[in-house]
Amino acid sequence: MIGFRTLLYKEVLRFWKVSFQTVAAPVLTALLYLMIFGHVLEDRVKVYDQITYTSFLVPGLVMMSVLQNAFANSSSSLIQSKITGNLVFVLLPPLSHWEMFGAYVLAAVVRGLAVGTGVFVVTAGFAHLSFAAPLWILMFAFLGAAILGTLGLIAGIWAEKFDQLAAFQNFLIMPATFLAGVFYSIHSLPPLWQAVSHVNPFFYMIDGFRYGFFGVSDVAPGTSLTVVGITFAVLAAVAISLLRRGYKLRH
Image (cartoon, rainbow, N blue to C red; front, side, top):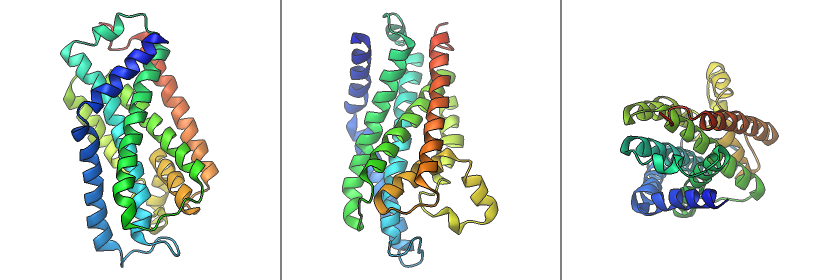
């Protein structure tokens, strides 16, 4: 496991060396979202009984930050390595595809949780939050970060230039995140868009995570956990298969 630990250390150090950009900047962005949306909609939107809109918004922003930054970590690492040519130094050592998968995804989880913790610290003072089910919070935060880290790994393997990776993020990750109930409850949507939301796995990550704070959710937390678990298993199988074959890595 020396190779796994070394690659994991390299990946964590890669984003931590520029933490002002990779951690502090997303925290500031989430704080701006909270100040703008919370100020404008606080007295106009009622989601759950006895839960203010700002309180409802905070867990959504935390989870959104976890997901987006977990994806950014693994995807940016691979595409940078491919373009600069230093990917060869990862391929030459006797690293198994399991070790590569574990190191890249776990480093993405570390970054996602670091940013999510920072967002929670700076936004928690703006709202009254409870911890109805702390274990659910941890499970959904970890699984959500692992899913997006795996998806970032797949995107990084597939992309051959930054434009392709940007398209993957702008046309898939961003819409799926913003349409997952970060800023609203899906019960406020027309029936058609409620049905669309139910096929979006990002919705189950955010809804299950929010359940851990308030004990209420749009769908049963067990259902959310099942969908999230299946999503991770499918994406992990795809990513491991691509790494084992060396798809777009070993030219």
